[in-house]
Length: 625
Image 1 (tube, rainbow, N blue to C red):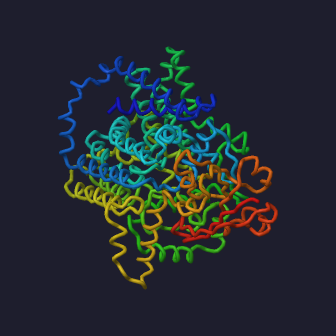
Image 2: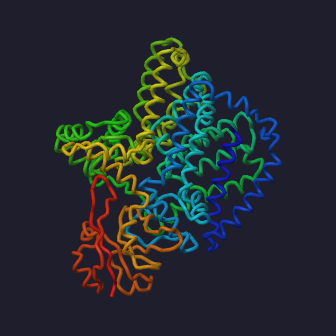
């Protein structure tokens, strides 16, 4: 497992370096990636021959039977079932992660069309200002295979690496091996992990590097091996390269790597080369681009407005959101009643303050969801409840023996993630805080599991029965997930005829929208002129990826306020697709006025249902005369 994690870190770091390098050479295309992957394959073979003996990679030493025997035990077998269900969902269904379809995949397609990374001309800020970590790992598949169907494998691999990383980190942070062994299978059943295991979200992807960064740093202190220091450095860089919100997790990593810094001095040339790779694999290139093009290094709205004490107000709001989102059952049909009740309970003055500091209404109103979905899920009801029960039971089981490692340095590493969490909570103003904190959860668990009483708790039959119920909940959620249902959802729902049931109508709409999301713009593509190679698009947070299909056949150009007819003609834009409902908000004038200014006319109207929350909306295909 150590070798697999090490290989994954180097592969992802290499692909990040390749992406930026090919961009600098204007060769970000299938040909450039083919050459880069061949060179990378040769380097991998050389590394394999050199290190196979030391890392136990020889086939005779793999002990395959012993490895498979592990999954005859109930806890590993339960994890294997979850991994299989997640994998089947990824194989059967095309990706539906909304953020990926709205800006992460489109940005890759924009770059490939231009043969280089560039700041995309767009009013949709997220297509430019988010970190590029998982994009650079995904880009070779899109460039060479022209499909997004295999991108889920990135997260499937990440999910399979979690148990080994959890056990290694937990035991190094003072959790007893027996306790760590049980939790290495339980912790990954958090909904943010299992729901993304067959998805193309980037939260699970970055969680692996958060664990590896601290884990290899702790390993390096004992081994003194340079490869462990280098792996830790690259993992920390990839952690930030995946999501800027992971930057506070550099604190526990920095404390953990501190005793091994002398290794860097002994190998200056190797360390310089690894640092160069780490820089391009980190969030630094994106932060520099954000500073240059938008004036903000983060690319996110971190302002507090004019509210006094807004940072601490955000901490309180985010704490409430985390409690709600992690304690809400997998399926919660009373969500609407809850939301109405909470809205009525919040005092008007407090509601006004929350509305000023939290940019999304769901965050200001403490909204609960009807079902846990990958775009919003956190650690989840099952693991959260089991963790709380275990912590309380351990306190009663061995209160006098409850102790933490007295080593000051190790204690700092153990508790530093809590400081990182507090830093994020003072800044975050989004509703999906539980999902955003996906890379934080597993680093926050060791202080709760390091007590002596935990060994007594995990040995109890009742605790194990409860743990299996957690596996059951996670498996059930994977089966009924609207993104990848593992049952004939449309057939069964179609047979259910209850015209007066709002709940059933809502369920049908949610499953229908998810079923069509991967290619949600297919009706719009159907009315485009044959052979159209460039399409203008007025968009903000829409699943643009669909308009690029089949990949390589068409290029999308975003149309922004201030663009003139001459600007669009220079970019070869003759047709523009837009949504009227939000046009006046974005452009500051009615659609009819803009059409006259652009000497354009409507040639078609299409009804598209892109979001279950908004229902079908009218889109217009415009032609510039």
